[in-house]
Amino acid sequence: MTAVLEISGLRKTYRSRKGVRNALDGFDMVVEAGQVHGFLGPNGSGKTTTLRTLLGLIRPNDGRMAILGQEVPRRLPQVAGQVGAIVESPQFFGNFTAKDTLSLLADAGNVNRSRVPAVLDLVGLRDRAGERVKTYSLGMKQRLAVASALLKEPKLLILDEPANGLDPGGIREMRTLMRDLSASGMTVLLSSHILGEIQLICDSVTIISAGRRVTSGSVAEVLASHTSGAVRVRLEQGGDLFGAAQVLREAGAQVTLEADYMVVGNASNPALITRLLAQRGVYVSELTPIAADLEDVFLELTGTAPVEGQNRQVDESALGAGRNGWGQ
Ligand SMILES: Nc1ncnc2c1ncn2[C@@H]1O[C@H](COP(=O)(O)OP(=O)(O)OP(=O)(O)O)[C@@H](O)[C@H]1O
Image (cartoon, rainbow, N blue to C red; front, side, top):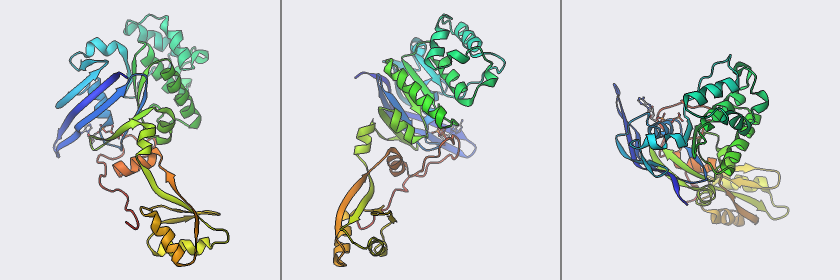
């Protein structure tokens, strides 16, 4: 595979009256061609700074970046025509139709107007293209924004929180759109707080925390390298589930009772569960690790619960607040 985007050792320091803040502290990222790549991190971890630096809107203090094999920002003019980006929500004139809006943007970007119906088709707005933008739903406005970024037929599309504020229907439309764009050969870099969506849409991910990469790889690899730390425990027929839960809780386990099994949340030593229960004459018939999802991985690596739809919530990410295993 060929890398469409490569970042290594990126540093960005902001200075304010309160002192110096390392927004990016030697950050690395690689996005391979044809992938939908998720870019995840807690609020204030450096995602927007990375994307703005990549697009030449901010000057980094150090590091190397390349888009489509061209060093940026030095050779950004050579690749700019092949990159579409929505990093801040674009503002549209409410009284313009989608068709007028895109025609105007096509003219401004030296793109042939014949591209307008094609992008309207791509984002599923063709039937509503003659209506004024102020009558559009948020989801339609987001799709119009994506359409504007597609005018140049980019090879790389960069989207910062494209599903922000959308309802489940809008999120589903955005998911289909991302998949269609990827199927057409485009590489998509997607920053989002909606981890379930990232898990569904993306081929690969990079997780950033406090300005550094904490993990990256295909979604399957990242999930496989982490366990949720929880196990499902079933007892042999007739076993006293409630009593067994009590025994484990007294030993410090976090236990959630379900109808015919229990989940032990912090089971770093599953053998201890069987031993403790067997000592009381209770026997386990099933003890299964529960697979991690992206949210578990995110929480474990960043110590921060993701907050959907909240872009600028806090400045500092809480590092080092990982899970405490029970029975280690
Ligand atoms: N113009 C600025 N001046 C000073 N500090 C800044 C500036 N822009 C960003 N920062 C700080 O840099 C750090 C990284 O911010 P950034 O916006 O890149 O994070 P983010 O991951 O995009 O967050 P979010 O998910 O909330 O959008 C934060 O601590 C933020 O407060």
